[in-house]
Amino acid sequence: MRAQARLIGAASGLLLALTLIATPASARPVTTATAPQPVTLGTTTLTAFKVVIIKKLHGPLNVPGPAATVYARGYKATATGWKLIATKRLGKPGQFLWYATGICTLSVTQTKGAAPAQNYDAAAVTLLYDPAIGCVSTITKTWPATG
Image 1 (cartoon, rainbow, N blue to C red):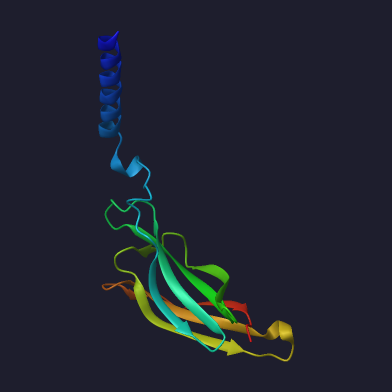
Image 2: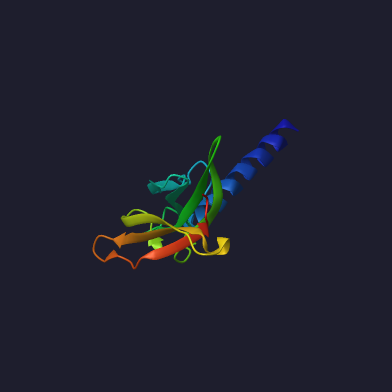
């Protein structure tokens, strides 16, 4: 009985090892332990509005030229600190390169119109695609006015 249990355990272990060897690394899921955390590329602040630009890994890290998706997080100032208004994607999913993407320019503005609906905060960011290609065109995102 014990010999049979050991044989079944050994066979299970061998099957698992063969499955891992036969499965390409790109087909295996990226686990939380190996997936990098989002990286902050830059931050800029007005009195009552702040924007944080981050990149997240898009797909596996173990491929040549891993991709990144870049986001702008808009925050408003509150009595207890900064509160997230919304997160907006910059560009297409996976458009940028994980290791090369950076910020060329980042600015925020506050616009006040005649009507409250015309009040908004905006962030304009130009991202570095890679050092050889340079910066992409400026991407602008808006959030409802905070102050």
